Length: 286
Ligand SMILES: NC(=O)c1ccc[n+]([C@@H]2O[C@H](COP(=O)([O-])OP(=O)(O)OC[C@H]3O[C@@H](n4cnc5c(N)ncnc54)[C@H](OP(=O)(O)O)[C@@H]3O)[C@@H](O)[C@H]2O)c1
Image 1 (tube, rainbow, N blue to C red):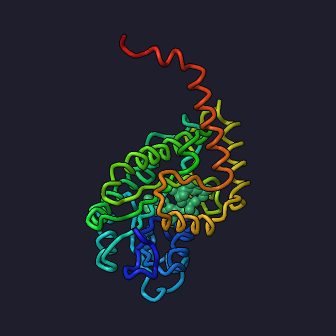
Image 2 (image 1 turned 120 degrees about the horizontal axis):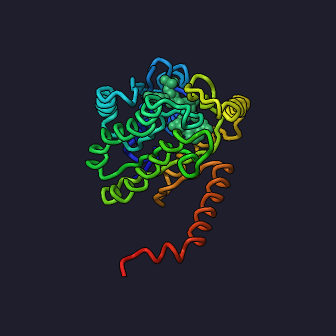
Image 3 (image 1 turned 30 degrees about the vertical axis):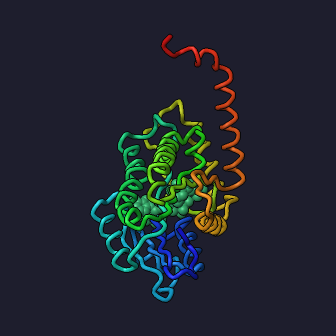
C-alpha cells in the first residue's frame, strides 16, 4: 500500500480520538503530508479547535464514541461517502483506569475494556470490509508499553492494553493475505492530557491497606502530567514513516523509555524460561 500523496489516489487516514493528544498530533501530521483525514471524536466541534479549518476539503470531522455501535457504523459510512476509501485506520481513542485492582469497581473495569478493547474491535470490524475489498490497508492499534509490561497500580489499564497486543499480533497474520498490515503501537510516556483529570481515572473503592500506595501513585502521576518526555508530534511523524515503509511492522515500541522497559521485560521472560526450562519441557505425554 502506498501512502505517498504524489500517487494518484490520496490516502485516507481514519483516526479515533482525533480531537486532542496523540490522535490530534497524528491527524495534523497526516494533513501536513497531504492526506485525507477523517478525524473522529466524541465532540466533533472540538476537532476544528484542535486542527484548524477545513484544510482544502481534506479534513472531515465525524462524531464517534467508540463504544456506540450505531455511531461507529455512521462514522465509517460517512468517511466512505466523503473519500471513497480508508487506507489507514488509527485506533487511538482510549484512557487509563489506574489504581490498585481491589480499589476499582467491576463497572469501571468493564467501562475500561468497552473503550480500550471492545470499542477498538468494533471500529476495526466496521473498516475491514473496505480494506479487504481494496486488498490494502494499514491498521495502527494504539496500545502502550503497559501492553507489554505490567506496572503496580495499572493492572486494569495494562490488562486492556495487553488485550490490544494479543488482538493485533493475531490479526496481523490473519489479514496479511489481503494486503492489510496491522501494527500495535506501544508508546512510553508522551505529553498529552492522558494523566490529567480530563482523562485519567482512579479507583474509588478505598481499601485501607492500599491507602499509602494509592496516594503515592496519584501524586507521582499528577506531578508527571504534562511533563512527560515524549513529544506527540514526533510520534506522529514516526507513525507516518512506519506506514510508508515497505517492511510490515507488527510491534512499534515508541520512545526511549518504552524500549528500555520492554527490553527489561523480555529479559525477565527469558530468565524465567531458563529457570524452569527442564521442568517445563518435561510436561508432555510420554
Ligand atoms: N500519552 C501517553 O503517555 C500514552 C502512553 C501509552 C499509550 N497511550 C494511549 O494513547 C491513546 C491516546 O491517548 P492520549 O495520550 O492522546 O490521551 P488524551 O490526550 O487524554 O486523549 C485521549 C483521546 O481519547 C478519546 N476518547 C476516550 N474515550 C473515548 C471514547 N469512548 N470514544 C471516543 N474517543 C474517546 C478522548 O476523547 P475526549 O476528548 O472526548 O475525552 C481523547 O480524544 C490512548 O489509547 C492511550 O491509552 C498514551
